[in-house]
Structure formats: structure tokens, C-alpha cells
Length: 427
Image (tube, rainbow, N blue to C red; front, side, top):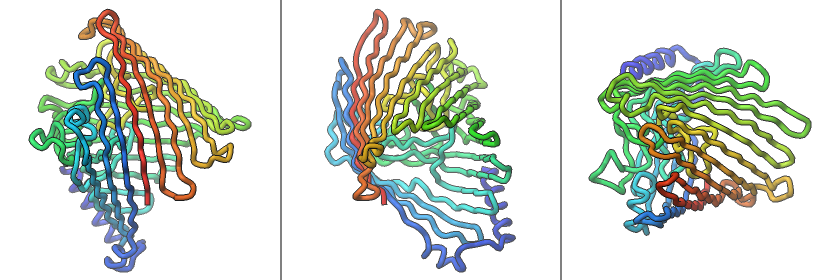
């Protein structure tokens, strides 16, 4: 972990040279620190038509506590504790949600030392990371985390530079990594989720990433990122690429959004090549925003005819055509065209502060070829209602539902229905 050692050394030297700090003593840095947290009660229900364990549901209770010290000579420290329990989970739900919500216990998901000097912020240790290619999902009771080093710099006007190295990953549950302790809280391991057609764990020996975000042109945001995973599955390296352009055009009374992006992945060994992960995805989206409370968007994506594309590291990376619950991995398979229409409305325009709705229609078309013996079509309908309670700041509720019909021409046809109720209190 040479990069981490060099980064820490640089932070120490810079800290000694810096005269800018907030706290006068180490005791003050801890005393003036800030605490925040979240209480969660999440209910998930999933039915797969014609499946042996057709219906399963789980209620998960969670707690997240975060503490960050005040800065001393530019240095600060942070920690985040996550805990969860499913006191009434049944055996069918343990099987259905083994990689998602079957997990009880606690984990220290963040424990880092940070340093800020000028317009540079560096962290070393366990931390949440959210970038297009390296991104921990927060869609389950345990939020994913990484262990490593990140550096963010904004010295160049209208430009953000990001560099990072991660060598361990904490997933959603203990499945895969801790086969003998299924149902325990997740922990940090030298294996990571790679989203490519379907999320899968793979061993790795660290990953490097670099990104640049530029907003020099009014209304236009340009993003580029590269990541390389070393020695994946003890077989070779994996390179992942991302570029994106977002343009917002203000119009009288509303805004128009235009987005395009590219994702690609490459492998460098015969063993990895056999997994067909050298894919490419191109996507576009047009949207209407802030139109008297209304919003709408139409997105389309396409992949090449031979290989699946790796969306990124962790379950967080997504595509424009990923749906509310079924998400994006189904859009990342080879020879796939996907389309998504989304409409939203904010009822605060009518006096119902905090209330919002969302509706989606999705079509995913997978042409036959290679290991796919027949054409497959996936049609989804999704809806959500969200409510941030005005009378109690921090309290929110969300009800989500999605039904997806999978039609494999001449082979099978079945529905997948998912319902989620999320109650959260942030303090």
C-alpha cells in the first residue's frame, strides 16, 4: 500500500507546515466534533412467479452513527458505526435476501484520518466513496464502504480532481466472503462487487482510480474517470472507463437537461477474457426539470454485441436506464438496448410540503447470441411516493413498487414483483 504510506507522509509534512487550524488543542478538536445519525426501519417484499420460494419478505431495523472531530492543524478524524437486525426473518427470506438484507450485527464502516490544506482534502482509512466508477450503494440496510486513500483537489478554477486507492471492501451482508457465518454483519475483505450484467464478488489486490470534473462552460459539466483493479480473481487486471457530459439549459419557467455518457471495461488475461467483460455502453438522456413541480425524462442505452460491460466497483455505479428497484445491472449485458421514461411531481407546489411521487416505464431488449439462446424482453412498471414530514425535521417515509415481466421468446415468461417501505429518521 505504497500510495497510502506516501500520502500519509505528505499529510504529516504539510500539517507541520500549516498554521491554519480550527481547534487550539487536541481536546478541543474532540470536544467540538459533530455527531449525526440515522434510524432505519426498512421492509422488503419480493415475489418471483414460478419460483420455488415464490414470496419472501424481511423487516430490517438499522442504526447509523457518525462522528467527525473539529480540525487541528488541518487534521481531523471521522468514524461511522452501522448496526442492523432482522428479529423476525424467516428461512425463505434468509435465502432470498442472503446477499442483500439477511444480516445482523455491527461494523465500523468508517474510521479515517483526514487532512485539509488550501483546496485539497485527503483521507486515509475506511470511508464511504461516491464516484461514477467507485461507489458504495446505500440501497440496503448496510451501506457499502471501502478502505483506502482518497484525495480531492479544487485548485484549478471550475475543476475538481480526484485520486484514490482502495484495497478492501465492505459489502451489504456477510454472504460470499463469510460462508460459515451467513447472517452476520459484513466486514472488510480483499474482494469487491463488480457490477457487470449481474453483481458478483471477485477477489482483487487493490484498485486505483482518477477522475476529473470540469464546469468551465456555463451549464455544462464534463466528467471523466478511470479505474484499474489489480489481479482480479488471481487472473489479471481489469480496466474500467467512464466519460459523461451534462448540459442544463434554462428556459422561461423550467430547465432542459441533456446528458450523454460512455462506459467501458477491458481485461488482460485469457482467464478473464473468458468471462466476456470487455463491453461498451453508450447512453443518452433528455429531461425537463422544475416545470411547476413537474419533471420528466427519457433515457436510452445500448451495449455492444459480444461482451458485458462492468459498470464499476461496488453496487453504486448505475446507468441512465436503471429502474427504481431492479436497478442497472440488467442494462449492462451484451447486445442489450434499454429505454426508460420517468415522470415526477413535487406536491409542495400545491401546499403539500415534502410530498413527492415518481412513475417509471422501462423496456429492456436483449438479442440472442453467444450464451443467450433466445431473445429476451424485460418490461417494468415502477412507482414511488416519498414524504419528508415537515413537523418533525429528519423524519421521512418512502413507498416503492416495481413489477417486471421477463419474456424469453419460446423458453419462459414470468413476473417479478417487489415492494419496499422505508422509514428513516436523521438526526
